[in-house]
Each structure stands twice: as C-alpha cells, then as structure tokens.
Image (cartoon, rainbow, N blue to C red; front, top):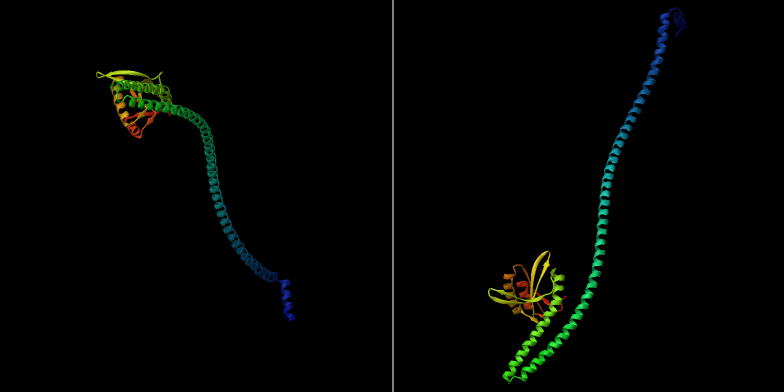
Length: 294
C-alpha cells in the first residue's frame, strides 16, 4: 500500500463515520468468523463426543436392561427355590409326623408283643399241665383196655360170662364218656369265650328233647350270648372223633334246632381229632375242640 493510499484511508476513517464503522465491522466480522469457525469445530467435536456418549449410554441401557432381565430371572428362580424349599419343609414335617406315629405304633406293638409272650408262656404251662394229665389219662385208659382184653379172653368160652363182661365193658365205657364230659364242662366254656366270644350261662349239662315223637339226647347243652345275640350251645364228648362221629352228631343237632327256635352253636369235644373229621366239621359248621386246647 502506497503512502498516499494509506493517508487517504486514514483520512476516510477520521472523516467518514460510516466508512469507519464499515471497516470496523469488517474487521470484527472476520474475527467473529474465525471464532465461529473455532466454535463450529468445538461444536462438531462436542457432537461427536455426544454421539459417542449416547452410544455409551445406549450400551449402558442395553446392559442395564440385560441386568434387569437377569435380576428378574434370579428373582423368579429365587421364588421357585423358596416354593420348593417350603414344599420340602412341609414334606419333612409330614415325614417327621409319620415317623413319630410309626414309633408310637412300634412301641405299642412291642408292649402287645410282651403281653402276648407272657400269655403264651402261661398257655404253654397250661398245655404242659394238660398234657401231663392227658398222658396219665391215656395210661389209665390203656390199662383199662388191657384189662378189658384180658377179661374178653378169659370168658371167651363162657356165654353167660361173656354177657356179664359185655355189660361191665359198657359200664366202663360210660364211665370214660362221663369223665370226658366232665372235662368238657370245665374246658369248653373258657374256650368258647376266648375263641368265639360266647359267654356261657352257668354250666353245660345233659338234656333230652322230643322231636317229631323221637327222643334226642344232648350230652352237653347250654345257653349263652355273643355280641348281644342269644344262642343255644349243643355238643358231645367223644374220645376219638372221625368223620362218622361228626355226621351222626350233626344230624342229631339239626333235629334239636327244630325245637329250640334260636341260633345254634354245635361242637364236639375229644382226645383225638382225625383230619377227616376236620374237613367234615368245616363243611357242617361243627366246631371240633381237642382236650388239650385252651
């Protein structure tokens, strides 16, 4: 710029107010534009940083959402775990209750077992005592039969003596029968109470009935009660009980049933019970009681 031009420019600045403002504005605008460019760069940088920040925030939100999903899943799992735990505790409590009840049953069974063993020991003592008495009875009966055989051989050739001895043997048989009936009167009532729940009134006795014009003899007759029901008890005593004895007795008992008009309980009492008699007794509902039973 020449000196003249410089002076003219300065003069215009001094004298021309509008020119002065124009130059000033121009100089200020350039500075503003520079600053605007700088600000634009900073804004651009800020926007880039903001975008990066938003990306980071989005990633954080995604991670946070995933974390919430995990937390929800953990809570659901925890709730299921609590439910399972509660069910487990309930099951354990029921198991303890069942276990306690089982131990109570075991204790009760042990007490009953001890009582049963005591009763069994007493029963064995009674059985031993009864067997001893039965053995003695068999010995006496064997001796008696030996004597009867000797008497039969001794009077084989004497008709009158044979008749006399036959009468004696019949009397002896009646004696044995009456002895067995006496045992039955003692043993049978207790047996009926323990095994059949029948309470016998008084003692068993011999009784006769007239049925359709026929006299029927019952060697062991009694009355009793079972579960509030009245019933009639009829029985007979035989040293040896076979099928035939059961059949004959049952036929006689059925005749008695026609006249007593009540429920009938039938039994046979003896020293020996043959298997054939047991089958027939079950079929005809006749109880078979051995002398050694209690």
